[in-house]
Length: 300
Image (cartoon, rainbow, N blue to C red):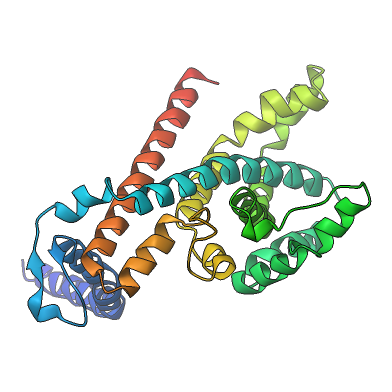
């Protein structure tokens, strides 16, 4: 027993030293992330303004009920859902296609940098660049003129504004998902391909029955990251519509609506929007996880 006491004391000291090293990170996490999340949940049940916090009024779940009768929020939710439905699959398919090409090229590092550059470029700068490209006398319309087509004023048209922003989002973030696919491709076991080659599998059959199934978890990661990113879209729509979500609310996203409500000092309502968005993203992630795991079990 006398020998165990110093060991116990030593373990306790080591544990305390570990916790002390972790303490700054834990405190920062609680103060800047976990604390604000719980506070936002708290004020979502109030009519609340940061300019007049003393006169907050408890209104229960009225903010949440009002959300689903608010035409502005419903329009923002529809725009964001449509944006995600188009951008996620197109972006994932292009990223996979580029990764398959780059994986077989010499100078792979050069292409990685080239395709990743738009991802690290400021979204504001990217949006401004595309505003010039898509303006009535811009590059796209001048190209269409060669074929006798009169192009529209993209960002002032309720029909073309959202698809134009989708094109910007795909262009600017496809490199990030291509890098993830490239890492997944380089991690695939060579012996599986050797065995498939001995069985006579080549080209499309190799891609369909070997590469795509082995990349399933990488695809799941890319789809989840892309889905979260698309449901949180804000900066491109804010820059292009100058914060209004126009024309005619055609580019209003859920996060832009949340931001506008918060800037109008309707913080309780804005917090309720944030939590509804969180629940939507969480549910979609669980649904995707369920389908991917079911396909895994079925061996698809």
